[in-house]
Image (tube, rainbow, N blue to C red):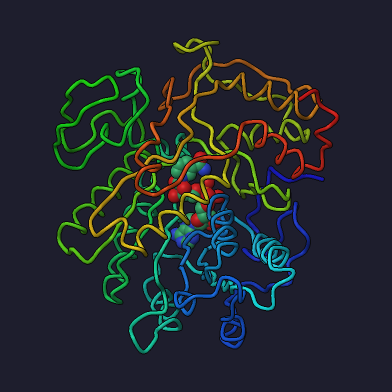
Length: 430
Ligand SMILES: NC(=O)c1ccc[n+]([C@@H]2O[C@H](COP(=O)([O-])OP(=O)(O)OC[C@H]3O[C@@H](n4cnc5c(N)ncnc54)[C@H](O)[C@@H]3O)[C@@H](O)[C@H]2O)c1
């Protein structure tokens, strides 16, 4: 069965070729009656918070869908908004199935509602938000914002499209949130904000390598450093769009101390839910490693292109901090909890979400070959514009302040992906 390579210009309601046919029509919004009926909870985890919901914008995409699922598993009600620009409605069906699996023996379960909308469309978003108004304000207890374009190469070719969606869209959206007095926001940032900083330092990247105000800090070697506010080493418009969003959110939090903003700087998410029922299913051609690799395994492309074999790394291929997407998703649950419990207070806070370990592209290819028992053909080509050699996180701040650590290994990532692809991983040598 084919799971990747979905290029569809057809209606947004089209089912992903990888998915069972969705029963949900185009332009879908969960009916109000369903929302009300589902505002009920697993008796084991009920608490007062559960009369509220978390708004997840871009919640049907790769990271958004895994985060929505982990929020539901943690007992949060979830409201998803997505324009299906890079996702399919069938993902909603999968999230519901996995939620129901989790609450199989419970009387009640958290709700998931969905609204198909562009988060930049202020009028439609206002109508949606109106549905969640409550006597005491809004029934939205916090927002997780994933909606963005994310391909580095594409951002170099189409910068305005990236700035319009990622930056201008966020400004419009935050203005709406502000008008509704919803001021708890978790923002999807990226290690791309660090640009080429690692190449210069040779250290794991700390949040202090990219700051929005000039600050002195001590690095892991005990040396005093000063980072000027404003990042100077960003190598592409995508990274700049994320940095701009962070800078705007930092300004917003300074202007109004009621805002609590957490920017989570993701390193390289791979893998999928351990069930193998939820994975990465983009409409657009993938540019990141794992979905490209899985396309080769599916026979959709003849070989995996390895961009650059002359980096200053163990085997010459680029080295990244690959993090299991479920660990990453749980980082959002941890951040939301930390903000909700005021362990993370008002203001702007940035956290790296990574493992702290690096693996090269060739090492990931070998791990996937060992796990699946399949040969993955590769083709070595030159470096891509905007790429950097080594990007590995220092994740200690997230551990200390969000009480979050990664739990899964590269082998877990590979095994879960084999399950997603219906490949028997016991056939491999791992
Ligand atoms: N995947 C990665 O490697 C990675 C790494 C670092 C940061 N990020 C960031 O994480 C976030 C999620 O990434 P992902 O990999 O899940 O991407 P994705 O493309 O799978 O998910 C993004 C979702 O947002 C939706 N969307 C886009 N524009 C929208 C709009 N205007 N209105 C409503 N919905 C919209 C898309 O349809 C999609 O479902 C993005 O902000 C991305 O920049 C991703």
